[in-house]
Length: 226
Image (cartoon, helix red, strand yellow):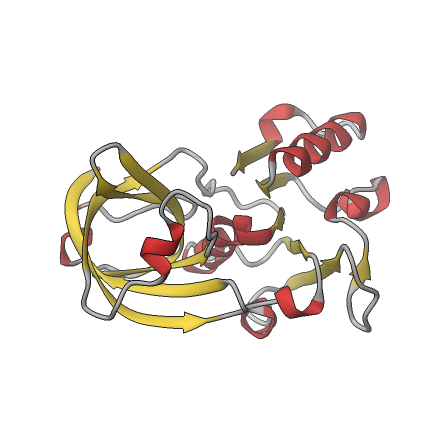
């Protein structure tokens, strides 16, 4: 874990309230993150905010953050100008990709996307691409969708890959209508050994319960909630 500073170098609006933010952090080479870990921003005395890494290199990291007006800090981070320097600590967290040559299923909602996406990238880096891999992800409406093209592009590097996007409040072509936990059936999960979950506490709890009811052992399920 490093106590360091990092500088905002790019900012992209992904939706009306979700931002992609990339930071330069030369110290990162001293303690490279693992896919699924997070960074803690120290914004002010008593005000710390943590966000999972969506991707990283040896000198940079990228976040995908939802700007919450009434939230404690996200608006400070999302409204920052290019070149602004932040203090914080990284890498942190134990929700990390297992370096195991088995099929993996990633299930998430909202900005729970970031660690799952990072873990999927990690599968490519570790050459864990021969087994079945699934990315099951949900948002509310079509205007909330982001990174769909990037997921499809990454998926072409896997031997067996499926991307299953859900919309909970709209019925649109190419999307499943409903919730990601609806996908968890005996038939759909049959090809997968490990399951990685990230999203709201309700989603994570429901997904874990459904997996357990279908006979998936707890040691095969890894999760984080926000």
